[in-house]
Image 1 (cartoon, rainbow, N blue to C red):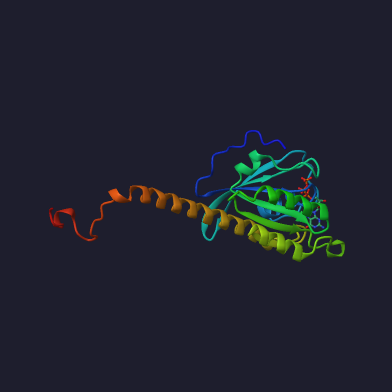
Image 2 (cartoon, rainbow, N blue to C red):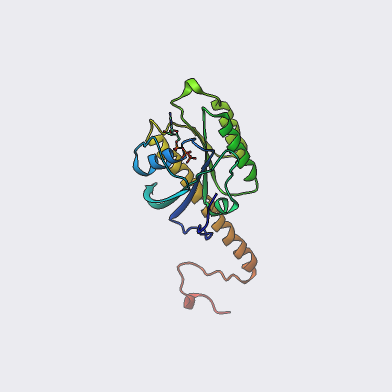
Length: 211
Ligand SMILES: Nc1nc2c(ncn2[C@@H]2O[C@H](COP(=O)(O)OP(=O)(O)OP(=O)(O)O)[C@@H](O)[C@H]2O)c(=O)[nH]1
């Protein structure tokens, strides 16, 4: 997978970089374009990964999404370390009609066990239940193992549930970012704890007793 030129620097607060990862033809582009344009376009003719930028409100806060729609060449083409390092959040996609695509996300999830990057698991093509090869329960179990969100959706038919998937992942990214900032601050305060001076609020320095 070609990820040349992808910046490694982590985003600022309002930017959220999402990598959409899954086996070929599971509907990664259909889901991304549904979220970006609310439209469903059945066939995408792209031979390489595509990046989109899109600003939306999440909980009334503007968020700039950068979405990397990956494009594996085959079922054995897994995302590169560059792609996984680049992402603030990972949308793992499989198709309910394709058991091998479920094996693909399982394998990617196994490579992410030491990663703190928030993940969301999506089972696409839920409109094709007559061709189902992966049960909803299997998806729920895998999401439980990864401790991440999970939905069965149909890019072909739905708009709001797909927006919710991207927004839930965005919330998880922002929450993880707040948590890591908080723990960094705690570590800094802990290290400098002995030097911290406490001032009584509401009193000016001149009103404080001189020692
Ligand atoms: N029935 C059905 N077909 C879908 C759905 N989403 C995508 N497809 C079809 O699945 C095929 C693959 O969709 P893409 O969005 O190109 O899949 P992709 O994962 O981006 O494919 P690659 O870029 O080749 O890896 C297309 O024919 C889509 O029309 C869905 O929800 N339901």
